[in-house]
Amino acid sequence: MYFHSKGEVVYKEAGVDIIKNICHRCHNRDRKLFYEFYSELDQHKIKYCLNCIGLGRVDSMTPLAGTETHRRKEKCDYVLNFELTDIQKEASKKVVSAVRERRHLLLHAVTGAGKTEIIFEGIKYAREHGLNVAVVSPRIDVVKEVHLRLGDAFRKSRIDLMFAGVKVKFEHHFTVCTVHQLYNFHDHFDCIIVDEYDAFPLADDKHLLGAIDKAKTADGNIIIMTATPTRKMVKHVGVGNIFQIARRYHGHDLTVPVIHYGNVNKEVQQKKLNGKLKRLLDGIMDANRRVLVFFPEIKMMYEAYPLILKHFEDAETVYSGDGERYSKVERMREGEIKILLTTTILERGVTFKDLDVIVVHTEYFPSDTLIQICGRAGRKPQDPTGNVHFITLYNTHHIQKTVRTIKAFNRGSAVI
Ligand SMILES: [Zn+2]
Image (cartoon, rainbow, N blue to C red; front, side):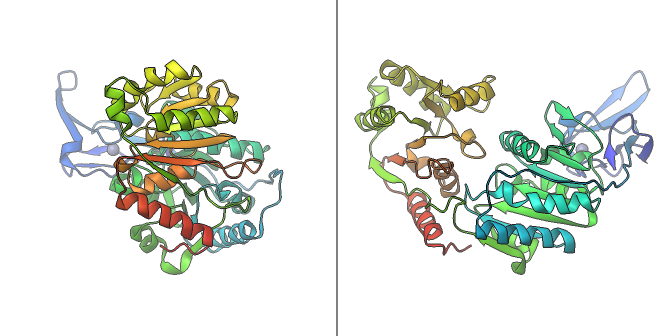
């Protein structure tokens, strides 16, 4: 079922149970996540759910209604402009058999392993058998990119797209959306593919994990794609249902970061641009490449920006609350912006060509973030290497773990 206010089927007489304290849309039971007020107009108390308010209000006086869509098979095909590598083909077969046998599957794939292409055949199988499919991610950036890539491939299919503020809806047989939007579904998807499962904030959010379980049918399956699996994920899918793709799809190694020592922020406070950082940027500009420079804090990034602009005019900044975030990413893609200073929002799901990466004050970053950041470089077959530089005050356990993990991936021996 797909919940919406004009739905002809009443799922519950009231969306929020005022006595039992439960939201029937998102299954929130946390007392702190409800708001109660006295309505003069209706002459009684109304309680509504704060946990899923972003999708529109669900309260104790309005029925929760929805639509049951009928399963529909479609002739489904896709266009792929290159041939999958042997390991991708093997992974693709695993996805198809997981969908066919309704088994969960964890694809443990290094960033840039061509994960999206690996799911095409499984989606085709599902749609040709009338199964409802959702491809979801916790991150809007990833949802948009995946939607573009699926649209390019499945040219004749109607693909629904949903994230905060945007809805392109048909019948939800084939949907790309944020995990958050899954609150809108109950017992609906036969196959849910979760990309970047470990991305903030899903891994820690029991409500969002619950949303996946609630949106899938009783015998539906979940396919998790991740570069950094956790024990919790492994437990969820079962140890026998893991497939590892250690090599990137173009067969080249992941870039091992080069470590430099320096205190960029201290020099910024003295209104100086760190010499190491300047030399790295000079080299990248001379090679006619572009670069993402990651900062641990917005404040530090904004203080460094004017100093970088003094030497390099094609520089910009971006952060999560930046209204021009998407247009800046687009300008970077077009090559108008050559140096993009960023917080960790661009660590996943964004692909640029001829890209190098610099991380400033790397000592602040955890290793799973650093591994994702390293995966930003060298994602295009025509530019498979890319350079990654860590500038750090001192070496950390997380830096060491990052280097170890990347080397293990390159040997093809990554272990969970
Ligand atoms: Zn709710």
